[in-house]
Length: 47
Length: 183
Image (cartoon, rainbow over all chains, first blue to last red; front, top):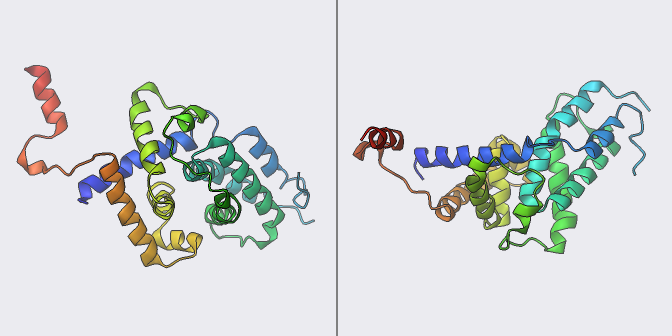
């Protein structure tokens, strides 16, 4: 593939990925809650 | 338990959107992806003592997620192409109207790539990992990752019907559109 086509593909791939990663709710609440356990010393407890 | 430094939590939070995008792209299913991310975060927290401060949290989380995907989820062999659009409909994140076709094209094309190629392309081309980091995450040689990425790019270009256009032979699209607009 030419560099131009590679660049075009890369741009479209990143645009697609960014929409998934940084859409309406990039980090759902349940993940924030799980990560928050780091602060509370509950790392050993699994729900 | 020793108090955890806030930077670890912050690093984990920061890595999560990319981790989730990777999981969605791997599984083609938002619910499965979120289960995978949840299990990854739980395992990471349970093993936080093994994380080497100063190393790349995102790479560590991606490695855990990838291993989970291969050891548990892939066995189910439920990965199917999104022929009926259910994957698109299930996405929590819907693109803006103007970008919808591009998004769908990419989504469909990715599901048609062989799994190892899709994974390599997502790590290097979308998640921003180097070839070396991607090789470490996948547990294979750097040359293998390079080869997979190259094949994935070629196949993706075919699937999306993207073609090389010689710029030197004529005006580019922008120039053409301006010419058409003023004609």
